[in-house]
Image 1: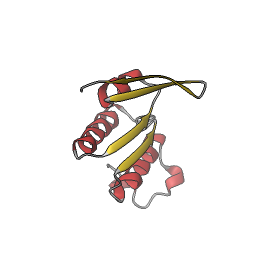
Image 2: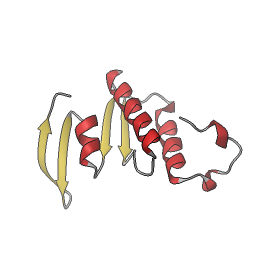
Image 3: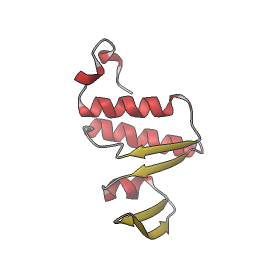
Length: 99
């Protein structure tokens, strides 16, 4: 997850991207069957986005169910096979894709 250099640094001093990595690491540590991620690529640099996309795809290939919330259509298109769109708290559309 790229956190090793920060082992002795207080979490409050981490950048947004490093806090994102830490949060995802905490979420997958216990090997959950269902993983809920809210804007998991927010704050990551290009390299971090690429790594997280690969991680999410790998978890999906392992059979994990991932509930991913994002405002980024590119992330949704690349990572999701079932998409629910919400408008003012109401589900307005569901589509399933083969990716």
